[in-house]
Length: 588
Figure 1: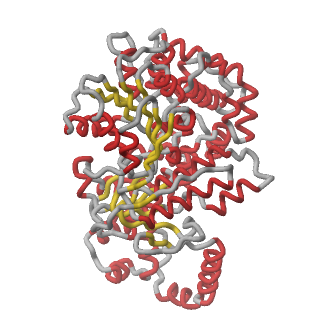
Figure 2 (figure 1 turned 60 degrees about the vertical axis):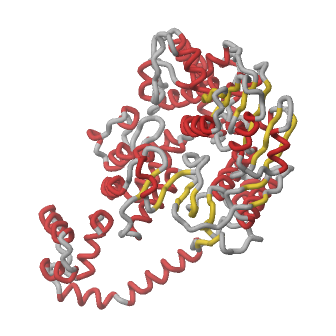
Figure 3 (figure 1 turned 180 degrees about the horizontal axis):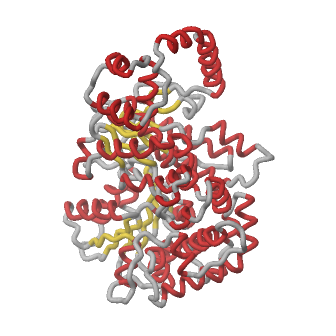
């Protein structure tokens, strides 16, 4: 194969190095060629970011006959040293706030659900410690990670108590009194300062490594190679530290992408230039040498679970002929928060059906107001998203989720899906022929406003930097075509053969359309009244029996006018009821 000069420079390098590789630049190929060029008896460790990347790497190294390369993730490495042959048992999904309240015997101060808010912050503090390179919980400054003023005030009031309980939780795990988390055994691995018996250690996706992972890596005697893309760091919420920027190794660049064209490369560069609004930034040039090919795989990518779920609902509503869809990751995960509460729990709270709520924390709340108060004090983004979905779709949610699941194909049939849905975090490392972005990413105008608004409290520049990274990662998933909302497209960019814009209505346009619609309703008021007189049954209350009868007729495909005649109601009344029941979404 023909290697670029940049790739050859990496392969011919010596000593500890770091490789800043743009999206689609063939970094795995480069690492494999680097490994091939080293002595055959060299002991090599390749550290992958997650299990899926690990499995793919195992295949690639085996295909090249590199039997001297061991492939692990940081967690699998730690598991082998800490958990294997021990008495530890794993709590795979971690501890929910409800479980921590019982486990740590948390007590509130008389205010509503204080114990659950405390549990939330204890969980975050423990996670922060386990991902850090610090020796003690007390060495951390957790309050500085809080941006919301109410949440910050709460944490400051209870901080000694939060630290005390966090230490108790860690001690319980250490003594194997309770199950341990994945973060815990990685932290314990870091604290014992392991010596890994390898000549070379190749650390992939270094920009998303935690401080604990980086500490283990840097303390090894082996020749060290860390590779990644400094602009693809999107796991700050998991306490990633962008290890590429923190290592002082000699730097090599891989700036040519074989995934996409120069048009997409130019767009990626323009988006990264937004970082100049935040601080002085060096954006390396990106050359796109991808070749346009027929579109086979199509994906819709969103910044958030909420944005993706709303888009998926809209998509299957407008594309009723689509039979097979696929969600990257477990589709059920899009309806559950990390805390364990489900979308259905929030819906049942919204409807006052407390007896149907399964999550203990949600069950303890008396109203949606309580949930909103909890969200405010904890900055729980996932629950906030769920609440927005419930407010938007209400009781249509069960039917909508049922429809999505019926169309969803299993992992082995992913290639049969007509459309793939994913958040940016879940599609990291993936690529698709055509990508469409949901309108929930940051825009340059929004970025400038947040940066310059003196009244905007809690603006976190590192989080804004990560928002730009998320958009960069999203646009660079495409191999051919990118469909991007016109509100997100940089001002100097124009649509072309690779970049298509999606028109997004402004607030003013939506308000104007609403006003016109309202005016038309007033102008048509006489015709509506005439219809009422002509069809006296049109506005009688619907009963469960009538709804069931309507559902059966609709499912049989009976014409709308025939249904209207049967019920002696107007076409509009039938259409309205069909929408009210969600029949058009479920069976349309």
